[in-house]
Amino acid sequence: MKIAVLTGAGISQESGLKTFRDENGLWEGHDVMEVASPFGWSKNKKLVLEFYNQRRRQLLTVKPNKAHLAITTLQKDHEVIIITQNVDDLHERSGSTNVIHLHGELLKARSSYDESLVYEWKDDICLGDVCKHNTQIRPHIVWFGEDVPLMNIAIQEVKNADIIMVVGTSMQVYPAASLIHYRKPNVPIYFIDPKPNIRQNELNNLHIIAEKATIGVPIAVQQLLAN
Image (cartoon, rainbow, N blue to C red):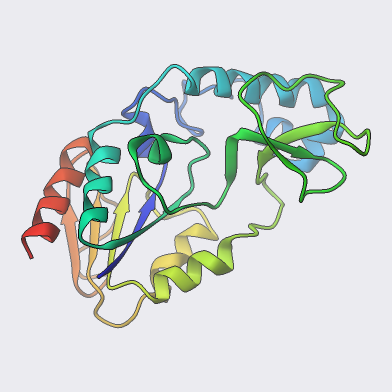
């Protein structure tokens, strides 16, 4: 079977990563447009770089959790595609081999001039770090107001899935929130969230597991492997 796993900030939060929209998150005190938009980048590159440098430093101090690891066990018997809104590499570090990062990757940087020039990057990005075109390097992140280049690929993966699992995301932020509407008729959805904002009758063949990711994902995986 092909299983599409849609993940969001909630799964990484349990590894210790602060969430983008948490009141105690790393962008507290900053308007979103100041640190995560082309406008903010053109206005104050130093502020944007430091914001992502802080997030990158924190990412390097945390590890995958039980939810990440449980998802990887599905690879033994099934084709698993992870479609994540997260910019961390915790899925990869847990052993998942097929991951689509809709919103970019924190441990990569790219040219401001040519977006096809992407570099592996674990250190801080500083003013003066330039690509071969002598243009400032920026975080490899999809900012508000920018296109989501992998969206069409993600849509196709959901269309081809036999099972869908949703973990750590309210599925309220578009365009990612639209993905579940591309599933084939009657494909089961496992929705894992401690406070699900979706009702049982909103989608057919919906299985709600009202638990945090580290508890709910192993439950869902056990059910899937048993079947």
